[in-house]
View 1 (cartoon, rainbow, N blue to C red):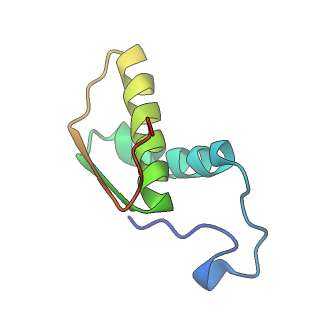
View 2: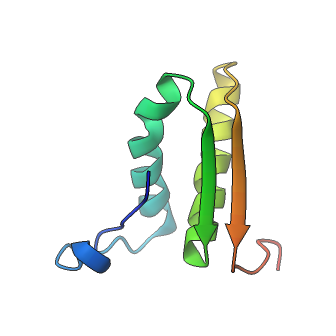
Amino acid sequence: MAVNLPGRESRIDEAPLREMTQITTAVHDALREWAAVDRRLVFFGYSLGAVVAFEVAARQWTELAAARRWLQSRAEYSGSASIAA
């Protein structure tokens, strides 16, 4: 599944999401049905997408761990400064 945010590319006429929490919530909610059937997920992001992928993966992990469900997943980030920087 590729993410195409409002206000960008083919969705340029839509109002953009301006807060990271809005973006991660939208992506997380879109992935919810995938996680419900125990599919393997690979998160990949480049530049801003790397930050979004990190935040969504962390949120997925936290939610599933709280429910004592484990999902095989992997995350790859590219072209973004360290979160700790």
